[in-house]
Length: 481
Image (cartoon, rainbow, N blue to C red; front, side, top):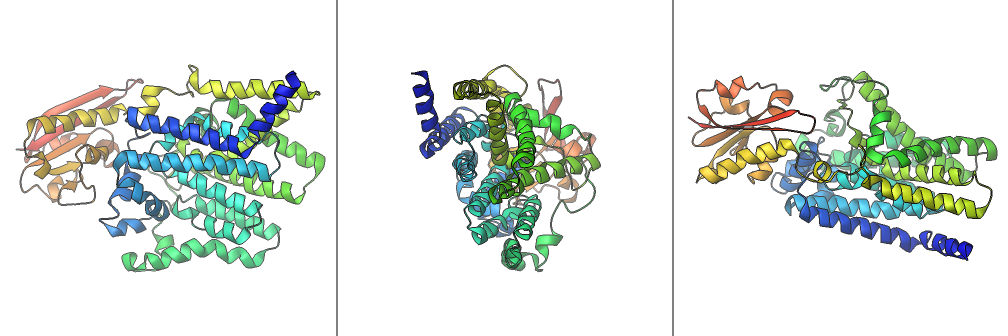
């Protein structure tokens, strides 16, 4: 009786419909969070990528901005016209589709208990938090997973066309293109190598009217220099930080999956499907992860050591985690014990994000506005409550979330400028200057004394909050004197 129950359960979880059900639950939960929580994952790049996608329809040159990532701006722009909720829905939809694609990758690789890969993806604590944002990592994960699936199904030139546009979602796409090039060389498909340049060729010509040169796709890469304004860190940084992204159980299975892959190759040899799995799954993950470890260690390519960059390879991590889980189950001799192990560990994966732990979900921290945004909101609320014609005023600010709060076109220099420009481009009428102790002070090196000593402005409000680590976030509001 028990065996029959487990057999029915396994048949259901291995069906293609199971992955769709998991993806639908994930999408529904995310949709609910969009309407009950107001967070944006972070207050920097998440907002800026949204801004580019939102205003590209007005400032067409933004469709070809290398930092913004042209392919991301192109596909996200229609959703961004509906504001922050629109861009969140875009990334949520992208991640939901990626869950189904990842299931299909596991199926094509003939991995046992393939349906569990969908569970592993959605229960990685970092997936939903980073999907409810304007970040580029979820789209990178989708394009990467589609490329791998197409290659595994022998739609090779289709896969190469898709992956050739990956550098225009995130610059690390160049690393992935290198892995695919290696795959082609191993399989002696030399003639197809030029297809990996298609994305660059298309964007070279498409962006030529804006940049005036065909090589802008290379010369305008914002990370192409051997330094970083953010410093550097230890070799161990990403190994430790990854735990906060995927949680303890999935971390253990990821390590187990990497070790099991090596053991299986030694034991059984390298068939064609195993070779493709090693290069396209193991290879893409290891190349991507190792690159970021090196970038941060040596402080190159403007690395900030942000763990969120690993969201881009969550699908292939889920494949490796499933391999690790299967390896644990295979240690037991009987099928009944194996099924018990699978079910117990699956329940642990599902339960982990809900238990009190540093890397589990924390509603206020993960899904709501952070203190930086809240201090900005206090300052902008004060403007709305005390100044009748605030919509006609000029704004000087560096924290880009302010443009969302005030519904300002970030790229319209008639209304929106940076704090340092208050001297070079002084206001002609009523204006508000909002200095903050992160973007103004750190990113733009503008101390509080700069606006405080500007005779054109006077301080009217200072908003200071502290996060759970007791770090101060201050937004100082100045008006024209």
